[in-house]
Amino acid sequence: MNADVKNKLYFGATALVVLGTAIGGWYFFKDTEPAEVVANQEDSVLGVETEEKEDTLPVQLTIDDGKSEALVFNEEVAQDTTAMSLLEKSAQENNIELEYQQFDFGKFVQKIGETAGDSVHYWGFYVNGAMAEVGADSYVLKADDKVEFKYSDM
Image (cartoon, rainbow, N blue to C red):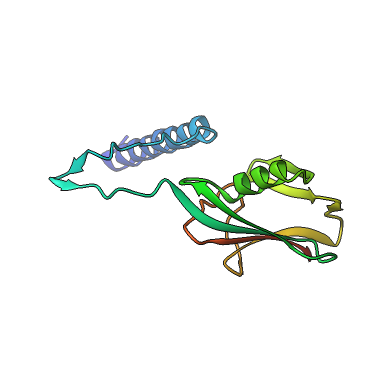
């Protein structure tokens, strides 16, 4: 076997091992939650003090079923709160029925109150007037966000 063929076989075998390791690593770690890094407020990075953050953030939640007057809740939430957590908390505190389905990509709202999605309607998720680019359980709220769950046509 000449050196050129040996080099090609060695390169091909190495590429397969690297690819197999990458795919195996992805498969093994795909369902794990990322570790949360919590910094002590007294810690500093390279001698620069870390900025203290407020404990809560003001946000607004609107639930609009398109049939009756929209429900609006002005809330104070902890940092790292997701829009879905806000909806769940507000629904529980105000005795509003909430149903969702868990998928691999996240939670999908099925029903709020008496209004359920069907073949031509769904509960849309909007942030600051625009349809969100991620699911409600992935969107981490920021101060003064206006979150809306709106019953919409497909």
